Image (tube, rainbow, N blue to C red):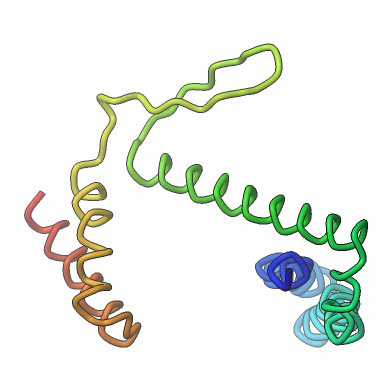
Length: 158
């Protein structure tokens, strides 16, 4: 239940919105306007979600006990899982393949990889990542330098 509620926050959207606002402010009037624009964008993007989470979170279990509202929260959670899956597949296709084609069907657009454009080094790194993560017991401070080292080594070899 909380996954659907938590995903109502705009995570990366905050960063992109703030960056664009600061860039626009800097181009319009310099450093001080960039800082002011960044603060306004941060406030306008983050605060509504922040308030939504902290005002609604204490009541989620009570809301979920109502059949219709609980069904709505489950639907939101299913949608969020679908969005995460869609983004994962999109990123995987664009990391592993240099080219993709879009197949237009009546109700859906399907992105397909061009198999000849497979990036072998990216594929090897993708296969190595879960092995490294398991070997490092999920410790990010170890996983990142090991994967970076593998990436650098792969760039030198291939």
